[in-house]
Length: 177
Ligand SMILES: [Zn+2]
Image 1 (tube, rainbow, N blue to C red):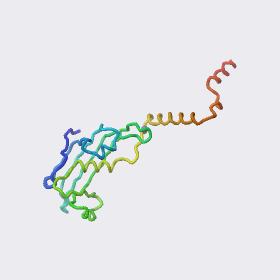
Image 2: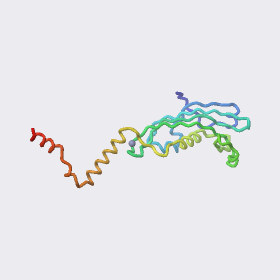
Image 3: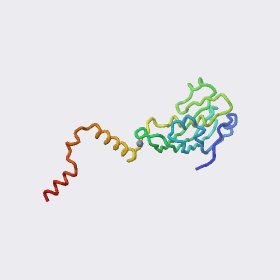
Image 4: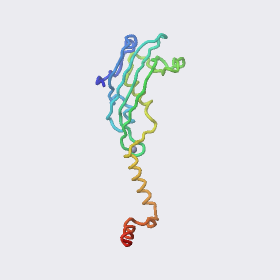
């Protein structure tokens, strides 16, 4: 695991032709949208990005993004640890209109300036791989639910006397003995 913090931005005039590679971590503080969707700011985001120019003179950003973070469970609202991971393959375009001619293997990234904000790229890519729903699969979440269900049924049930209490069962057993 690398502890190197990647730069917030790179110069598009250099990184592609120099075939730069950036491997390191990104702080959650620099990813506003992603951070907003989390239960807390405890987490690690790691990226590996490779810049290149292909035979068609397209500027390519390939790599991988992963994150260990905590989101709120949508069933019990307690924090839930999740792992997100995605491969990315972006083509840097100066304007949106050029995106129509891209092959299906590429996603466009529009940037008309020399300064490419890497944190924006990472923020966006993480939002894209965020699951729509997040639930615990552990017993903890189910126990919470069970508790709520019992509470609900005792409150709504008027037939509590229908069931024999364990004490009267015991009494009957004793009487027989
Ligand atoms: Zn839960």
